[in-house]
Length: 329
Image 1 (cartoon, one colour):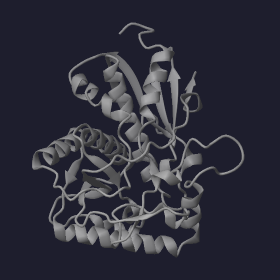
Image 2 (image 1 turned 180 degrees about the vertical axis):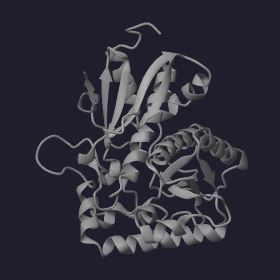
Image 3 (image 1 turned 120 degrees about the vertical axis):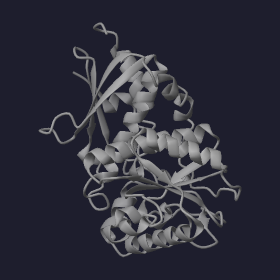
Image 4 (image 1 turned 90 degrees about the horizontal axis):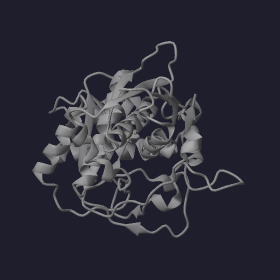
């Protein structure tokens, strides 16, 4: 590949697509550095956007940054580029999570490029889904999406789904009894944190969804930390379709694989017409996390609980502008 094949304007387009990724509380804990001389984009985690109480090991931060990394790969494929990724390239810089170099498009690019249309249509939906079952063929496709990124996706049976819903309720109780958790969640939800322009991160009130009127909801209720007047009530699906995304290990490289697998699964689901959300509360408490795994499946370490189904897409949540997250050196 000759020098200057990837220009700064192209990298800006790639990053604009990358930042549509989900992240815990929409904190967007990523920074990108483009080095034109080497044609390398470096992905860094941003410790100022870490959840120090609910994500002290930065597992969720790694997942969010890796989801953005996968989007970068999809965008590169859409622009006719192959992306060569090196995870954790420099042990002396712990916040440097990945380096991406570019090359002529190769095998697998078309498979990534077809997901590009879903990038800007994928939104977390905290709205009720219908009771229509997800066809087995679509679930098989999602399992394959996870496998392509070195992870596995398990669809638990009804009895374990009931267990998972109970764990969500237990996690909500633990949150209510921990003022530091409540304060951390409130800081990232509900609107502006102070005077000045409208914030471009966090979860706005319009994305909370309704309160559940029929028992525990299969989604995080941000209204517990940030009450919204006249928010409304609704009935969520009786038997939500949940899936467990897992890895064999539970190290930083595993988390970076899981984040990429998570985004591939979410984009594949969006392309297939499914609505999605994520339920991570039980994973944020060590005393609950191990219980999340399905004992009848080789789930390993659960990295995310996904909710899948047919229903309205959630509203778009704000994103920071590219100029704020991309630096050229």
